[in-house]
Image (tube, rainbow, N blue to C red; front, side, top):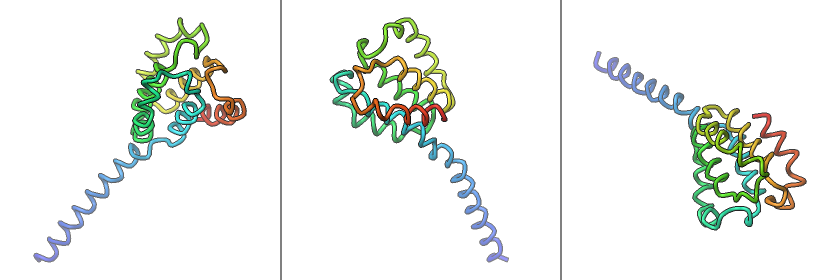
Length: 148
């Protein structure tokens, strides 16, 4: 009788642990595609287009993106990147759109929403703010980011 209870108890513990692991999986397995899109865009941005402070903190930013577990965390990293880009990096129309865009990023709760806002930022970014390689990489990046 004691042996049966022990097995039942252990089986219950294992089942509970498995259930917890399965619930944690979606957060841990957030879309790699969105992370890659954000990292890809940042990689295309010229060092001259971002603040020296961001350039110095880039390794931390990269770790934050890679470790993000939700669309809102990735949105926060998108906001950090956009804030590090100077006004000369974006089209003049961004001055009137930016406040609403920031609010939309802060409210974004899905990968699709964050990806769409990332694509919007890329669309207003000047070619002069991007590395030359971006001209050839852009079409494939845009297709992948738009599919999220």
